[in-house]
Image (cartoon, protein in one colour):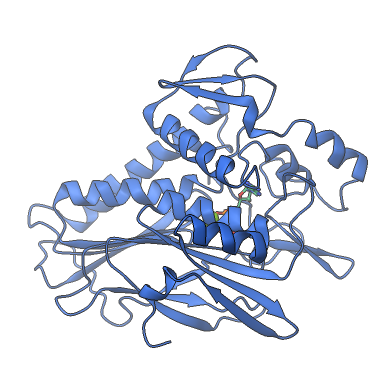
Amino acid sequence: MPILRFFFNTMSKLSRSYRGVFVSLIASFGLITLLSQCQSTSSIVSISGQTMGTSYSIKITGLPDTQTVSQLKIDIEQQLTNLNKTFSTYDNGSELSAVNRIPVGEWIVVSDQMFNVLEAASFIADKTDGAFDITVGPLVNLWGFGPEFRVDQLPADTDIQSKLTMVGYDNLQLKDGLLRKNKSVSIDLSAIAKGYAVDQLVEYLKRLGVKSCLVEIGGEIRAFGKKSVNMDWRIAVESPFFDRREQEMTLSLRDYAVATSGDYRNFFSKNGKQYSHTIDPKTGYPVDHQLASVTVLHESAMFADAWATAMMVLGVEKGFSLAESQQLAILFIERSGDQFVRHETKFFQDYLINN
Ligand code: ADP
Ligand code: MG
């Protein structure tokens, strides 16, 4: 997903399609009232803008009377700027860029935020035997999906093999707020930091005392509380069509997060073939299978975000059994000719509404 496209791609690359929001919010169509001063508890306040190379949108009910929408927007954007200053690979002055310059073999202190995200990334890498790998950045760049964009032809296999030697999450060691690289690897948190930012904003809004909220950054979403007395927040999951937007199903979310990864929004085409921005760290090539999208429900947006990418790498077969064994709520949508086939884990089905 595309200022700081810290993790993501600019939208103007080659014939790459627009990186839209995979999961669209249907929570408040026609009902949003953007108020500028004191809010009654029944109003929904909507705030949106750009961050992390993509868009964000936030809906809030029960904004405390002491808050104005205009000041809240300023405060939220300050939070987002701070998160970018930690996690952006597009900003040479970010903490992540500094981390990527540390010498091999030295323990360095990282911020709590950085440590938490690195630990979560390492957890998912372990569970997926390295299908999720935050050191995949050199390959992401080689394929034209990173900050060092340049791809007007497919990378040569020799270049792919040479970048593969620079990949391996197990070269990162974490201990008590410290990080050490055992090899010269660089870290790309594009597949997890948006989710983390969503979690941070939800926690921030809870601390402010909002009654409920729905926070979305680049398609990673988390709900807190209920949209209204009678209704949870609702989310439409898109069908993974390359050329149009259709709703696949509706989910009901309360105090839960949802993230979708897919092959149908961020890719480029060359010689009639499409190349996804999800890279298999084992082969060095973009994933190439029939799995069109993965939607993950989780209490943490950070974990939902990362699991979704991890499952896109694993594919349906390995992904589904891992999802079941980890008790994850996941929907896999596979292409079969011009049809889509859904595979839902049993935990996922609890969130469906009339589908
Ligand atoms: P999606 O919503 O499709 O998951 P994200 O922007 O959340 O999109 O994550 C995709 C980004 O993750 C890529 O642009 C790349 O920077 C990074 N990435 C690609 N492959 C992997 C991988 N195997 N493990 C971790 N991160 C990856
Ligand atoms: Mg994601």
